[in-house]
Structures are given as C-alpha cells and as structure tokens.
Amino acid sequence: MSFIELFNNFANLVELKMPELAYMLRKFSKLTFYERITTLKALVKFLDKYCECRAGVIPYNVTKNMTINELWKLMNETNDPLVTENEMLLGIINLEGNEASSDYCICGGGTCVENPPYPCSETIKDWSGKYVCDKDYRHNYYHRLGICDGRPWWQSYRDKGTPNYRWYIREGLLVLETIITPSASYTVQSIVSIADYNTRTSTTCCSSCPTDAVVYTEDVPIWYWEVEAKVESNASYKVMVGYKLV
Image 1 (tube, one colour):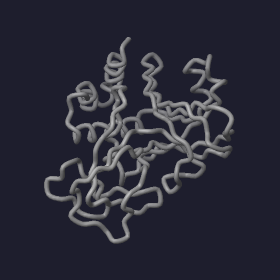
Image 2: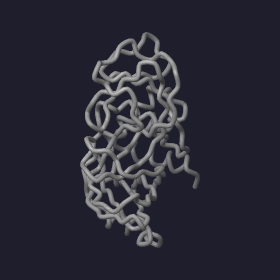
Image 3: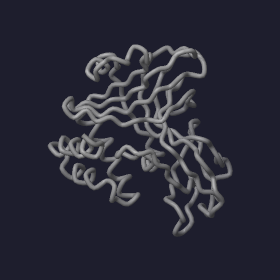
C-alpha cells in the first residue's frame, strides 16, 4: 500500500470523529500554506482529544525485530503540548511523507511589512522565551525531531534527526520516528519537534522589531513530549512519538 493510500485510510479513521478535518486531510497536497496550518492545528487537537499519546527513546538494537504493538508497550504515556507562539511553524510538517522546507518571515514581537514576501509570524519565540525578529531576512526551515536533557521549550535540544511518518491503519496508530546517535551520554527528559534552520536570505520581512529580540537562531521548538531515558554516546536509539485512537 502506498504512503498516500495509508494517509487516506487514516483520514477515514479521523472522519468518524471530525469529518471536516478528514476532508482537509484528503486534499492536503492541494491546500494553500495557511490552509495547511489550520489543518495541522486541527489535527493536533484531534490527536490530543481522541488519541492516547506515548513517546520513547529505545536502543535501536532492541527494536530491530519488534512489531509496532511490542514497541508501543515500551513507550511511555506522555503529554503533547504545542508551543502556541510558534504554531505557524507547523507548516514545515509534510504529512504526505516527502521532506520539504518552508520559507518564513520571522517578526516575533514586531510587525510584518504590508504584503510580506513569505508567510509572516509576529509571535515566534526561541528556546529561552525571547522573541525572534529578523527584519531584513527570510528563514528557511526543515522539520526535525530532537532529544533534550531538559524540559522544553526553555531548554535547547542536544541531538536531532529527520522524522519519518508511519501510519499503522490496522492498529489505529500514527507514529513519528527517527534514529539518533547521541553526541554524549546524558538523561533525555523530552522529545521535541523542531523547525531546523536551513538557509537565511536577504529580503524585507518586518517593519519593526523589539530592541531586545533575538535576530537569528538556528532552530525553534514547535511541539514537545516529556520522556525519561538514559542514552550513551556509543549507541543508536529509535526516537518515537505515537498516537493511538481510543
């Protein structure tokens, strides 16, 4: 079964609870940027309301021959808060499986120019809670999944990887996963969805910025899940976040 077929089957499951969201998911590839943001925000609410959420950081050699149901049992129940200030960055998430980047004007705490050249946000904050406002540049981001040694979103991630989206229709499961080899040994306290900096190009984005704003940052947190796991620098780990319809 193709990824798009799996995606449409997931929409069929969603339709039982939220038919309008299911309709938007089926036409996801044809949506405008802002329609995608609205759809993804609705999907986050759906997952929060109708699904059990689990997350885990599991040694890769343990997971190789395990079924998704066996992996699910190893994952821990967790909360799934969205960083509201940065929710526009959900636009980097491509639910149809192909990695893609997105361009933004980042004007946190400031004012977007009239008719900005790219989607513009006046609310973006960094890991420390400071506004990010880059008046004369556009930012291009990819989606990444990271692990942290603190509780975001006030802590920076330690390591990251490119997430894959897995739809397990028979089990009613949506899973984001990646493989990470940590840069050091530490205790993981959270998994975080990251808008990961790709490039920065000159263009006029903001008409004003706060004087104390961060002008440039390599990555911004979007969504996070609390976990507890110890990792070693000489091993690889499967980092997983899963949602199961209940």
